Length: 348
Image 1: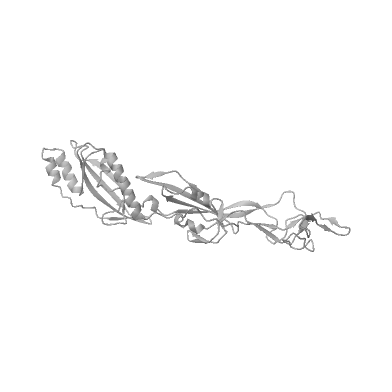
Image 2: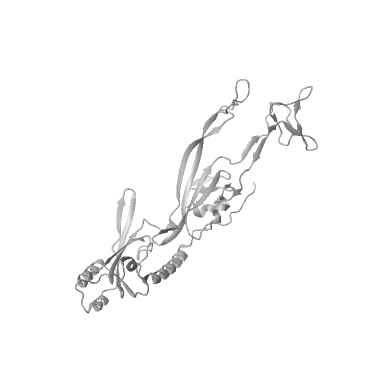
């Protein structure tokens, strides 16, 4: 069996490096989106925004002066713990005032520089990430210039690339021909010859599917390096240890998806398990090799007569002494072997 080394090994991106690159990309997108609008973003509180909205409904000349006097000390909502069945969730919110010199809409206001982005960490609790932004204008006359943005956080969401793999198992059956029964007796008629249609039986089949989000830069040749290969080493899947030679996989890679501005792909790995993926055959036939390595008919009796049934061979091309002797077993390896431990970055 030829052991092949995969072309690459997938590693989940370092989260600090990922966030830095992500923020740089988002800043460039904001600059283009806001098209030169000058915005001021101030952390504030819900009560201050309500008071401001009341004032904005009767906007006066000294409005900007009064806006400038709003405290900039952030007051986030205290984290709340919610219980839904077996799931406990921590939630919190922060509030932001956005002031622009040109009209904005709800989306552009929520994307103003300084407003938290989706999946950003909560200011005081890093386990909570921003899952939603709710935006509304403040006061009828101030519509499109002054905006409230409420950012909601939860500890039950993660960046798409850092979500754990989803692993599902399936236990099913399929039909197979069988030649020996459960007692080890050959499946033949009373005269010792095979039936016209070989009997079949159910065989248990174990499969698993692993789904994982990956970066859009994921090397598509990864699927080729693992395609139609078996594992050359032991590896662990969902806490289950799989021995070498027991798993075969096929990979599929989805197109680019976007979730709240985050681009990613989804890789699906389909596993199929057997005790052994090698092919094993009884070494029997009608010919054997002579001393020169040439195939000659196997004969028995006096006078010699060519055998009418496959005769047992010894694994080196020579016939065994008696037709009832157990033939040697020949093993063929139809699949390349690849170290599945290199899949570890996709399996957790």
